[in-house]
Length: 517
Image (tube, rainbow, N blue to C red; front, top):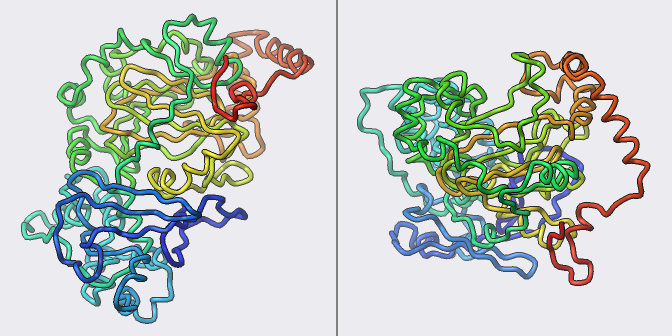
């Protein structure tokens, strides 16, 4: 995972090892409000807190979400140390000889401890108190020990204590303020959980929008050339669009447990978590078996006519996972990835809204570092962090991303191989399906027969034989289809080369970005 370099003074490294350096512009964060300055650290201000990022001649302001308060333990960015009357950093004093370790390494080490040991260590010094109360440590403990059998109670530490000892009612919720504690790593984790999405991150809408087009037009203009499109009016007849409020979902789903990250949770419990949580990477309900668990949910929607052809159906019960219900609070989502098995996808928003950023297969997003074999991807720790540190870099790229906000009732087509990031702007519910049609069948087959397919294929137990099973099933159900597609692909390669996607959407004279399909 990456923690990009954006705070004043020497940053704490939070990157996986890779041979590339970040090309993003270096930024410096300074907490602007008096209650973040050491002299007034204990003051309480109700007006909005603003943070300023400075770097390479650019200045950006970040505002906190409503009701957001200062870091619960008074942690400040290292930039504030420059404006302090003292050069003292209590972070170092409290760690003793361990002060030479990076903050990330300190957390990795104490992350090996159990809850009781963390509590004991937190009494050793003010510095250890701050580190041992880092919320992700307690989140990991809750999810590992209690799985989905917990009720979130305002913070992960309190949730752990009350699950560990239900009779304990006197759990201290307010954090102890620690003076002169400076840490980029801890501060940015808090900041990413509490800043508002900037308007400039949301206002760009460069995707093609279509309403009421024919299937033939969709195939010709979007699916065959592998271009994204946002389709309007496709869900008008969905019962889900009208009925899927929280009360309905809780009633229909009852005690059924859904996949939420590494655990299984009841929907009612997940909603209670979603209403309270404010963290850097909120849990995301993402369940591939929802229609089997609750058949009514599967009957409340239907596949839009543009995506009716799904050739993976020839595998019957052996087909890889292909459809998911997705529910999450504001700030949750998916960092940059390419959909599994070289499939294309559609994503329909039932409630809420989502910000999408998409790059074509030949353009790796800034701040994203895939391994040579594609099996792993290193990227910023959180989605908000990517916007803070890398989004501006795309403005100067010739090949800019395709962006949009997809709202309730709208469907986005995600072409095969495209990188995409999605963040919920509010509580959101969506249905998504990955599929194989004649347009991407050959690429799927090529993907499934790669030498390292067993590490790349997902959503199925039999990763080794999926290619042979799928190819044999296609040839049995649709004889001659693969040969026809191969012949068509050869003929296409012999034709004069057309304008690339980016040449067709950019105005070389004006330098402006536009679509001209």
